[in-house]
Image (cartoon, rainbow, N blue to C red):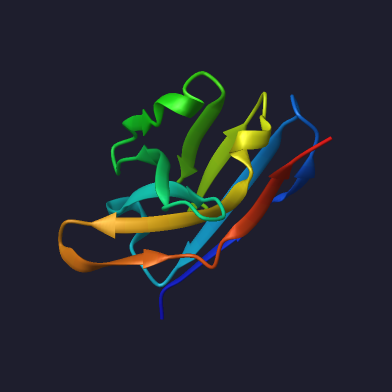
Length: 117
C-alpha cells in the first residue's frame, strides 16, 4: 500500500519560514519524481516545486528564490523549505509521487500552511 504522509504545516507570520516533509512508503522512492502542490480556497491546485529522480528541480515563478525542494532517498522523504512566506502562500500543500513506468500517481492527504499576522 502506497502512503505519502506530509507534516510540518502550521501558522506562521509573514516573513517566516516552515519546512514541510513528505515521507513515502510502498514505492521505490528513488525512481519517482516528487512534487509539492498547493491549493488555496476557491483556486485550482498548482505545482509549487518538483524534483526528478536525478535531483533536477523546478519551481513556480511565484516561489522562486524563496522555496527549496530537496529529497533524501535514504529516508524516502522529500522536503520543501519555505522562506520569506507571504499571506498568498496560504494553502493546503500536497505531496505527489509520479513515475513514467506507472500510470498511477500518488497523493498525500495534505498539510495546511497559513501565513498571517
